Length: 227
Image (cartoon, rainbow, N blue to C red; front, side):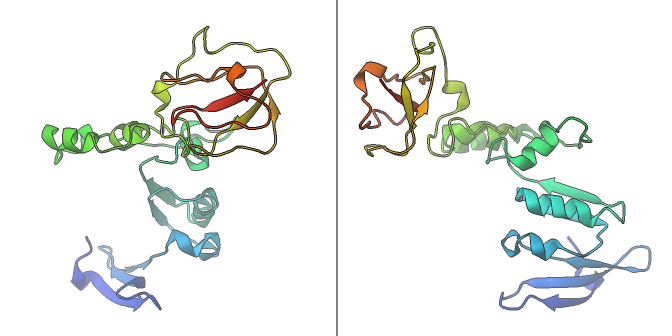
């Protein structure tokens, strides 16, 4: 927290009640620091132009905003902090830290879990854990990105399985559709596939589906196949 008497001057954001656009803060060195507050809704363009020493991105930004923030610190040799829960799975920003491209400089990160929050007792953890959707539990409690079967299918990745009877090589000529919702008639581009993917709770036989229409058989199916 910044002590009120350390705020030398401030400018309020137009159109947003009680929101500060920028402020001048008295620094311990005797000088002053300029603090600017921005929102992701302003877009990448709002981050253009300035040379900044420190940037703190609270919650996961879009990759263009993250990249622009890095460039804002290039001439100052500054630093960018990013703090967020990885609810978007292995996103482009997460890959910058966990899976850098060959030749890309590795970035320092700290993985924090519920166990690192001393104000959360065991009873509180159990209470709220039960309310978290299964596909978000590892992300919210362990800081581990795990989108599972995607935002359409709320299935934790750990529930997906494969074994000889349900994951097998199928001959050429089969077509597949991604499923968009319970009871919806599916149509669109067909993709030739060679494998069948099922979850631990259900598997749709290729023989039960045809080329003309398919209906989602369960909330847990990832793909449907037609002969």
